[in-house]
Structure formats: C-alpha cells, structure tokens
Image 1 (cartoon, one colour):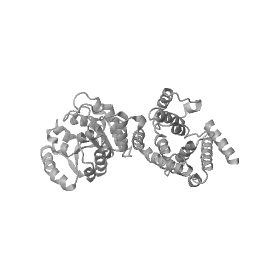
Image 2: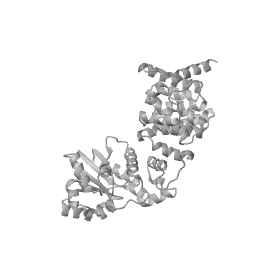
Image 3: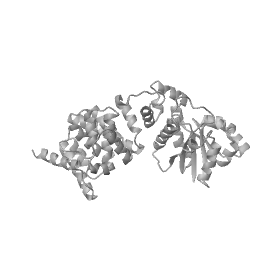
Image 4: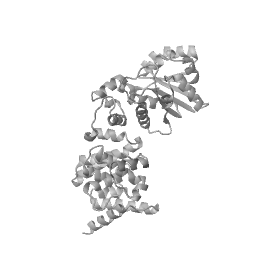
Length: 401
C-alpha cells in the first residue's frame, strides 16, 4: 500500500491544497491520501483568533470530501491528540506503526521542501518516508528543487519526487493573505465553496455574516458546507429545476431557489440530531416520522431554514413537505416536490414522461410522483405516510373537477 501524508495547519484549507492533493495522489498512484492537520505547528505560531482545532479538522474534512474519493481520502487527528509540538518525525513513527509495511510519502510545498534539513529529526523523516514536493511549473520546480533533491539524497539517502501543479498558479495566495481577505469580505475565490460556507457559518476569520439575512449566493455556500460533496450535483439540479418550474407556473423563482438550496441541508445528520433540532424549534413529529430518517431530514431542514436562516413561511412549508407531499399542496410545495423528483441527475424509467408533464400539466406531474412514491413504499413493505395518501386523494379530486 502506498500512502501519502499531507500535513499543515490548514488555516484555512484552500484550492491550492486541493489542487496539490489531487495531483500528488495521481502522480504517486496513492492508495490512501491522509490529511494531517497540525496540532501545535513547530515552525510557526497560529495567529490570534485562529479557528479551534476542531474547526480546522472540520474544514479539512470538508476539503478532503471535495475530492469525491471517500476510499482514498482520510483526515487523521493524530497531531491534535499528541501533547507538545506537532513534529513530523513523530507522526511518521505513528504512521509506520499504524500501516506496517506501507510505502509512506510525505507531501509538501516548496518552502517546506527547501527547509527540510532544518526540521526536527530530518534523518528520521527521510528514513521513514519518501518526499513529494510540488511547485507551480516544471521549469521552476526543476530550477528550485534539483539542488535540494540532490542534497537530501546525498546526505540522507532520501527518496524524493518533485511534481509541478500548474493549477497552483491560479491560487497564488498565502494563508496569511487569505485570512486578511476574508476579514475584509473577500477571498472566497480561493476556497472550495463548501469551505467558504463553513467559514461563514462559524463566523471565522472575522467574517460577520448574519445567517438570517444571507444572499442567495451566501446561502448556497453555507448549505454546501452542511452536506457531502456527492450531494451537491443533486442540490444544484433541484435549485435550477425549481427556478425553471417557478417561471413556468407563476411562482417566485428566487424563493424557490432558496427552498431548493436548503431542502437537504440536514440530510447527513444523525437520527438523534434530527430529533433534537425538531424538539428545539417545536416541530411536531408523528410516530412514522420519528422512526424514518428519510422523513426526518425534511422536518429538521425546514426548522433550520426558518429559525436559523430566516426563510419565509413559503420556503419553510415547501421544505417541510418535500418528501411526503400533503393534501391541498401550495404551488411552492408542488414545485419543490417535483423539482426534487425530476432534476437532471435523477434516473428512473418514468422520469422522461414526468419531466414532460412537469411543464404541461403540473398537477398530473405531481400526482405521478406521489403515486410512484406510494408504489415504491408498498413494494418495499413500508408504511406510506398519511400525508402522501392525502396528496394523492386531493390531486385526483382536483383533476376530476
């Protein structure tokens, strides 16, 4: 097994880190890429007001998730739990024990590579792991790295790989500069949207966003920070579909965007977390909802949309019923329910017909979705929620009139 360890303060993790991780993983053929946020970095002092260790871990986990390779990436908190300074030599000793026989590679940028001989126990580091250093262009990489590569090989018998990552040129910003930009309302172009959303949500780096008054763009970032990266294509699809449907049927496209952006914001919460959110904000749950996590995320998500993110009653109700529907659905409820069903990433035999109907006969399209849901639940020997049955009845009655 070939394992790459990518350490740093990740304060904050940005697109340069992501570009380097992707390129190194491919160039080295890594079986696992381990992000290692530093606890107490030996070569620098974390500036005042820095995020907590937990917050840096959570941001790094969001960054790792953006690679969309859960079998490859892992975030290791080993340095957070080790007292004293976070020496790389100690981390590599623990890595060698954790993965006996693995081929270890230490990933680092230009400055770290050029000063490696001055680190704590460089001989231990270079005996336990190869070093993969990355720069911006092949020419600069060879010009800067060749003398150091030869020195480390000659002095320590080091195994060194150097790679160029052209995308780093697009993220030519230091962490210090980025923190300053964030405090002044900028810097988001250097960050994965989900990381930026986390920073807004946690009010890090002197950002002062009022979560109840976010713009649509800010709301999008915050929502993305609350879900897995694999869910983002679906959320984006629902947002765009809901807006198109609103324009077709006379709804409020901006309001539907807000509802769609937040409709799955609690999708990855635990059952206990769903229940706690609903209890905190007085969301009533029936026995079926309490036992079904698929239903719970609509309730807890609606609660956060209204009471944390300040969304309208229309958005609240649309999210609240987007999984079950209900009798006498409002226009916004129908639009979100349908957009969730037919957005572009959805694939099932009836989807083409349902997409056609969505722009020709809204109620028939919603009824089709409701009946497909009922059929699926019955085939899986699961109880159909009463709201779904009522939705079917009222839609059928309306179409007969």
